[in-house]
Length: 452
Image (cartoon, rainbow, N blue to C red; front, side, top):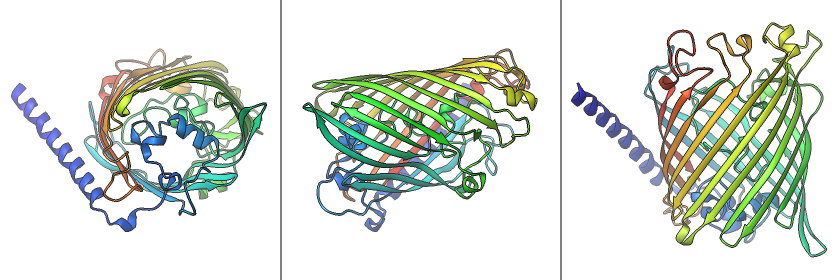
């Protein structure tokens, strides 16, 4: 029996390895007409100048300054501000997902196109933009994705460098330059074919369903201050944009957002500490019949550390803690929540090491816990919001130094991920009332991530 299990595992690994090789070769042999200019061409810098490990979205100090200045730094004249990205993966879970991982997919061992995106990404003078439209290969649907349009100006105040800017964006933290907050935090790539816990703070669940304007100041390359507000576009607009207007619901009025951070650099290393707050009233779904709105107050702390050693060896660490206070009187009136007042806590930490900006190993841990609410989370166990576990990722990026045979426009990352759940939606065992354990959702994922 053990021999059969080993042979089965070896067979699966061979299949996965062959699939990754095929994807990589297809990318390398793609005709050069598919390569379009992006930030690398605009700045005249290879991907490793802006990104840890030579691939997004982890930013180096150079990359953070580029974003703070509105994507406007240029090495020369006009470049076509277009780019593209394709992410595909193979996913295997500890046990199959009853009913299938997604419509049209089996319970386990699924290959899928996670996303294919087009970007308008560039800037000059005082204006720049990062605009993404995405095809979701699992849901088989198009939608708008990350939006960050900026206007900036740079000056000096008593000898201190200062950048002031405005950002029009469609998700709190999309505009942030640190890889600690939800929009650009670890894991940097994932698949909707893999199971994920149901509970998470509101601040990470407003992507593509909101629109906001924030103003910021970046002082002496150290102090970051940002304030702004978010509103919900009309349901009709969101439907045409490919977003779900009911998830998580419609903002009542304007939701204020604020962010502060301090970064300090010492030669080859830097660290950051910061805080953030989001205060939002949300109509559950699109239902306003109760006359109430649910209130969410998210308060958080974050920190990061980077060490850039010789020959492109890099160590990074990121951490975030979020406390959320909920007043769910609207959901309670709709019999969608048992309690009016609840809390949700979320803690995440990760550390990565990249060898020569080519091969990286990242370790992460996560823990979400909070109030017991059978109606909100489902009557399956004692603490339905609780989910915790670990994640490890090994990846390789061969062309981050700009030496791709297709030129500076092309880059590729291939990697493997493994997510290990200690608890899932409230328990380690029988969390759904049908005998399913948290470990049944453990996910082995092999991915290819191509940008050009």
